[in-house]
Image (cartoon, rainbow, N blue to C red):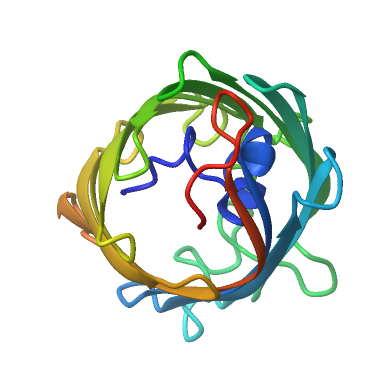
Length: 279
């Protein structure tokens, strides 16, 4: 969905996008994931586990290890996240995520050689920071939701952990889902730049989700299209998604794969708090 997951991105997605969505579904899920960007030779591997069934306080933990341009700048990073969320009512959820990011990069390997602008360090990571995200989600009606989240709220002052504010409005009837998101990046470009995303999903035969989305990034001046599909069983799901820049100075492609195990699945809480269809 080209990143449009601010409103309906529950389960393990909430750990990485909006923590307030963690109580959206009553689940105990495990996920393994991988992503690849061939142009930058970037690869990411990770996983997450979430539990929103044991108590009203939902919790999750996720992490990824990534590498980019191994024959060039040779950047590697580890991203760890711990999420807690609580439904103050059937229609209003709050959540927060503690995050630790550690980034290493080779020395004299950037585009300017031994440069303060692009170089790594010999003994210490270029970033080793703790920060946090916070989010809120409101069910306006049974099918309409609004969500808001702040990212890297300690404002670490680096484009690798930009201070951001995201919001979105979405609609779903459990067969068709659509949402539109906006993300404002206050750090990376020296002034605030906006990213806009919109996407939708159709669930066929209660088993096959088909997804599509569009993203415009004002900072990078890129337009991108996303497509995805998967298979959902009562015990597991397999999902594949891709995003491709269609307007960009240097177009990039990202492909992601996720395998999720459903240890327990009570369904969507919905606006009334009653179980919906099983996930």
